[in-house]
Image (tube, rainbow, N blue to C red):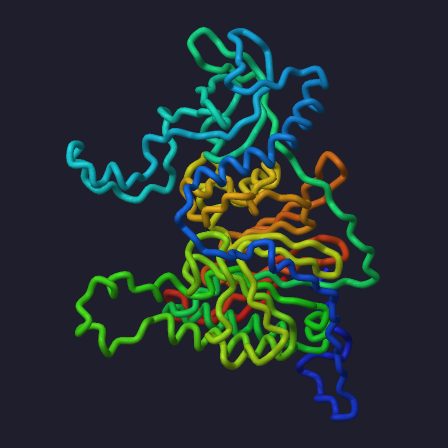
Length: 472
């Protein structure tokens, strides 16, 4: 692991006599093979004149054959696969369709502006599920209410599944069992001869007033570039072949939503809070890209389009760092092959949205659920903004990744998941750096992951300073 590579070597302590110019060691950084997938989430004609029903129809059409095959594997090749219009009361059969969860607590602009209800604005909720929620399955033509052995609180709108059971006299379908598409096929990983690492960081939160966060961020930059620690640390830093920053580069406090409603004479000489934050980000990226390739993903609070897939940040915002070919501005979601290891991930909007509209609270559990559903963002476009695709759904997983991550998580978690066809996927929730001072390192050779924590100087109640700590 990285901690073993960067362990202190004999005679290499910072307290030793400095080595002469002719005795200084030079650590060559490993250069991995990198193959981006820029067209997967590229939006060409940005037309919002289409209906969102097309993306649901395309999703169901693409997933139907996959789920039919999975249903026959699970319940036998002779299982009856019916459409809703062909249902017969009491007949045991399988149906493939899209889930819709009717939630009483789901925010609705129609309810808020309705004059006949006279509703007061409701406070923001962490969870929007309740006992009165109903689960409905629909296909191209019809829909039917579900009951039985299916957890309605865990399910979310937009998931395409196969259910097995029968329709009852009350018009509801009693579910006896259900299955998901599960993991797609996976390309085998190449065998690497040495340890190589990819550093994942997220939620830098630039533009906030947290000085400890800035110190921890500078320590992270110094560690990656080899400016921190003794020869052992520098030897470990040389094995970091790439840095991936997963969204929310700027703090939410850089967004002044009142500016649009203020009179122009009040905002004539004011400057957006994101300007200084972007300038600071450019300076930090300049330090990194001079030493290591860096991929930068946009997030919820970053200056790009709000709907998924978010397009790469514009290079004109980074006049200093964009001069280096090692800076790659990528989309959200992100997909690329690094030394034959396929990375796939988002900045966390899809996971946070599912957390709000389901009973699942662990980001790692939600990440695994989306992998089993074979879909990155099932709640889009219902409660998560996305582009109105009409020919295909790009969020469907067509090939199984080796590393599947989500950014801006409350804490670091990782798990190795195995699929039915011997797939192995490393799930990683990348913590928000501005609040946890933690990044994580993925070993491309072993698919192991470990956190790297930076705790800055801070004063206790007795004004006693604690030591600066870098742990991994």
